[in-house]
Length: 248
Image (cartoon, rainbow, N blue to C red; front, side):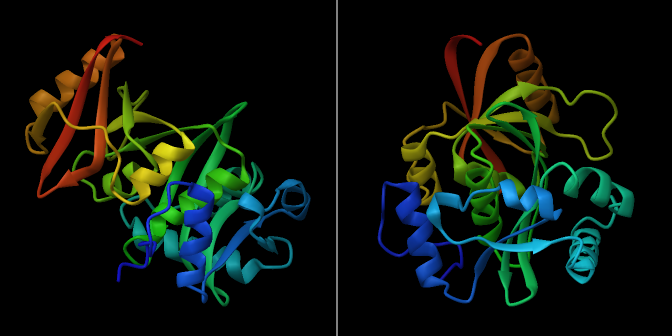
């Protein structure tokens, strides 16, 4: 079974989270960050949170740094970025097996209720979406923003929290490219998306190699049109998109 699967369908995301952990008793929901920050983080959905104060867990910080660099070899994470941005701004949401990091998500504070996802990694299929979900819950996020690439498998992980509204182009210069997305965390839709049962359907299927069409859709989104990437995101090299009437 996919480690991300939840036995028995549950519409409530909190119940799904508990079922996921019951099916994977070797995993612990964990937060790695400064002691002061960890003291302000509540247990996600009342699930006991394992806290790793960064001041006392340099080895875990180095483990995360190595794992991140392994996951993104062309964009090696600098130690100062880990310290100054990832840790000091809050904490890293982790799924751990013992003292081993299995999946991790970094969501930076953007504005009240919003988190900006900057890094998602996983050692096994299915775990990344849960690390991101527990992170969103521990930070009480209502809306998530981030950058994702059209051809990356991370598109599948991100759409497990719901459809991605295409916001527009990435500001500045980006080494990898992609687009800016936004996910509104509706609890029922979130639960449905985690089980790949979200009701939103595509109105257009586009091959990920069709950069001209995809770039045009991003530009139209930036101009105010409502376009979404629907779950499961990417499938056999094609992306499901939905256009809705009206403007942002």
